[in-house]
Image 1 (cartoon, rainbow, N blue to C red):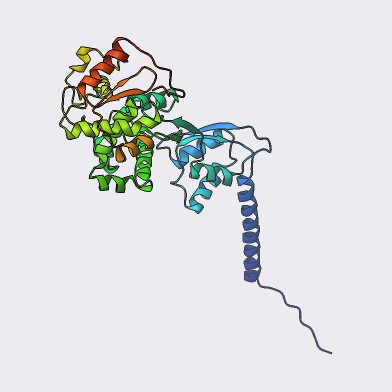
Image 2 (image 1 turned 90 degrees about the vertical axis):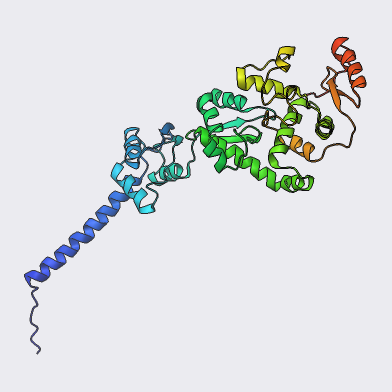
Length: 358
């Protein structure tokens, strides 16, 4: 019979086994704690408006999240952000969050910047002052703050804008603006959209073929945008301005006078007086020959296209017929007759259907 001897572990071995057991238990406990700390606080939606200001640190954000009852643990939330490598990627903005969201979802929303967005529409023909007012009325920031960004030379240079302001390059469209975006961010968004349109619609190639630089096109398009009230007249009006430039004539475009008065005096008269036409402004094409100093509004795609594809005419003049359309003339005599007919006698033809208001 074999004599079986009993084995008794040493104290050192017992301590090792006990230590390993404790580590396993701690690991399991830590894992369970970590998972619980990231879990939603409640199953009820209870939406909460949560704002992150520009320059806020992760520590400040987690403190706010904790105080508003959106996360269980500040430490765990910060650890999660560090483990994912997004501790410096949380974006400023205004968000709709809920204590029913797990911490991972809240972090994703803040990192992706999925905040409340403002839908801002910039109509064709609006100038930077109008855009500033639109943004201010939307509650984003003050008009003067936007105008400061729109005339920031270093910002304009970085965006490839050749003028003294972003006028003409804030492409008219509908934009989705996040709460945390600043005036410079909006300028960047609109100008980059302009360049995208300029290239994807091949306007750059058409301009090159006609020997025109982008600034010339934008300036002329801005005047056409303010003068044309019906689509079919855009190319004709563009032809008038090209014809006058070729002959060394002053453009004598009313929109340039109004814009100069707006820039210099803060007024934008609906009806121009003789004193307005004589106002010495680099935008006033009644005073100076050639193009005005810069664009007088932000033109849309149709006006840009009209300048790059003007009608083939001999017209040098046009006057409003008081119904949204114009009477075009080749000679000054014809034009004077039209002015008498439609501006002095106030003959009013049948109104043009669908005439937009600017």
